[in-house]
Image (cartoon, rainbow, N blue to C red; front, side, top):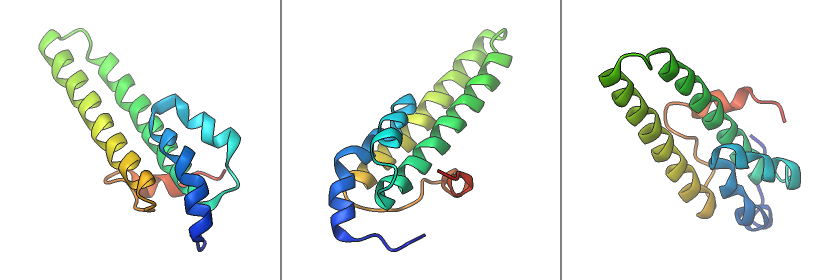
Length: 111
């Protein structure tokens, strides 16, 4: 990862947090993708979005078993919300820490 300057962090903080609200990752992607700080959080947000989609599809597969459906949907939403909150807090605090579990997957995105 390239060195991120303090002014890039300050500029990116205003919009980077949107990267963690699922489809709203498109806003910083379209507006501020050249800022290295924002780009880091966009990649993390895309990893979160892809993870949510995969977990959502897995949940649909087990949708016909009522108790399993409730457990899976709760886990999917809880996991997504916890990671989103971590990402939002990190982005607003000027940190470039990877999300737990899925953070390394974000490096594979080439934006």
